[in-house]
Image (cartoon, rainbow, N blue to C red; front, side):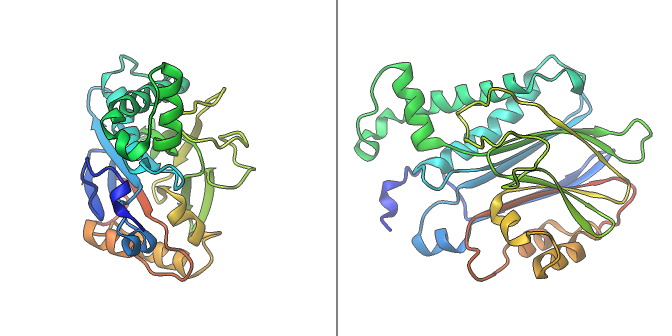
Length: 287
């Protein structure tokens, strides 16, 4: 694999991890380069971002998986998650039910298109991109395409759990780990998902309808957001990987322990993997 065909900036580390808490939740997140990209010396194409917005009492989580066939999707995934956080940090809306989720996706798509326009400095790698808005948008879809899971989370009204509004574009997923079972509540490759249509085209394509799903997270539940590098080997959650993460997530692990578990080795599953886990505060034990 010729790694020189990938645009280097921004620098994409092998692994990123994050962990923190506020008054109503605890969060752990990690994104790990898969074995195939390590072997080929190519960038990790997954990314995630999370932020607490105290003026709204929201936590925003964004997880993206750059499409493998889009050669600069490592940039697209990073732009998408940062754009999602920026949108919510700047929106005037303070009530979750009033969020215009299609507008969120359109804003992220605009940022991807603007990034596409900036890539003209790399035409020696990409080839001639053209000058029109249509050319730039087509280049963004070709080079920067990415899936997205985006969630806004707040404390439940009774204060004993969480309430999340979630959307997915593409095949990344959301699971609720409750009473020892993984409930695939959004996204993924399951066409019976409640949240998205069967059209799983990635950003910067914006679906005709973007409708959120509302998820109630009980005091002993764990809400998970992940790319298919985690979701596909997880499957139904009854195998070895599901058992491993049930043990890891039973109490809040250290950030390093969480990332170490995500850097699992399993035959045939060598894609990048990203996972963000959220626990209601006061119901789990910090390790």
